[in-house]
Length: 62
Length: 222
Length: 252
Image 1 (cartoon, rainbow over the protein chains, first blue to last red):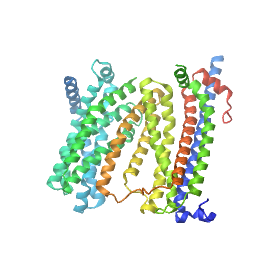
Image 2: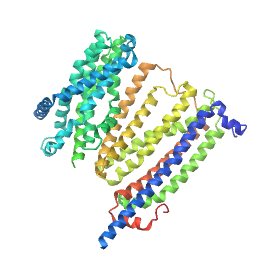
Image 3: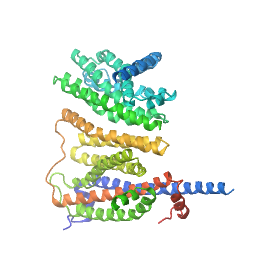
Image 4: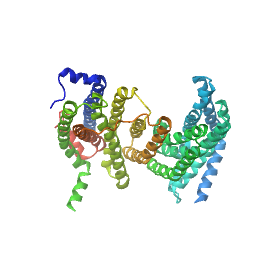
């Protein structure tokens, strides 16, 4: 059922290893980095908004 | 309807005549960019003849871009644009007039100077006719599409660079058919097909783009 | 009637925000499941292509990435049309949340296309109609993101961006056909994506990967739209309540 005879065959991709893994590697990289960047962005936005909110409530209390 | 358009055209032309330096600079930009290419790629006539249509057309796109940021900016600054937007006649017609005026001062001179520059590239007589015709027919589309970009970026920082980012990808069909018309003439295939497609693009953009630009202006003025 | 009302209710950021948050894990999970199934089928089970050898396996990500890059632009234009027609707040936010993912998909499509082209065509880049159009699509994404980023007022950014999307969507077919025509004039048909009859396992692998990319894009867009919502609606009570009880970086 599995097409490959051995793991090294799988890595070599019939001589196309560089191209195939270059493609999959870049895709994996982007799909790993994009959520991390989005999450960082979100955390930064939340902290900034919380700081603003605190400053506002302090001002209105005084 | 025609009255509004002609009124806007004559007004914009009058204003442009007061700043002739702008028109001349854009024209010289076109001439200089085109003249730089042979210096960059070498003087072989065969190569130059092959590159001429593309070089002239890309330079024409860039030269048109130069004057786009000012298309609405001056009227915006002195409040005229807001008056025009609330006036009873449709803003799209006003923009149509401005687009035509923009073409008269930026596109038309390019077409007139193009054959002279074509000679620098050793183009044959029929190729010179083709390049002049294609720039003449194609540049109104550039003014029309450019008006959308100018309206969208009205009053933004870095508006000039932003316009090129928005507008240049949309110029691609004009570039392809414009340069293609000259290529087809040179290779003996006949440039009529390209020129009629170019005319279709121009009519479509003169017809639709001002209304999209008017919508963008209304968004910007809100 | 109640369905319609429900839809309108979800169009309000206050209700959509928690809903989106609840849906993200499901989309991620489904995407992972489709991804594993697609990779297993495409990378381990599918036979060698008799023309392209093992190199064809790049299409298992190239085709989904290309599809998504085009599909996302259409979805953005759809949201833009809704936003301009009905003046809804959510649609502009959705369009902006989708744009980076769409641009990355276009980039991936070009990257994998180049890596596929090198062994198959012998060159990283050809001015093939499809590759060129994909490049122009990337430019359109970049233009949209640059425009919305340059406008400070959120409402104007939404509307101006929306108009640009609609102009872009009208122009895409014109650009595509002009590029194709230009290409046939200049290159003949020397370059052709091999349209060999695909084995069913290959087809299934590709479809599963496309589903994986689709679900991933939805998850990313939802993630981003939640941040945009907080930012845009920061003066509303629901955002203040939300901000009060989330500890940054440690929310559910």
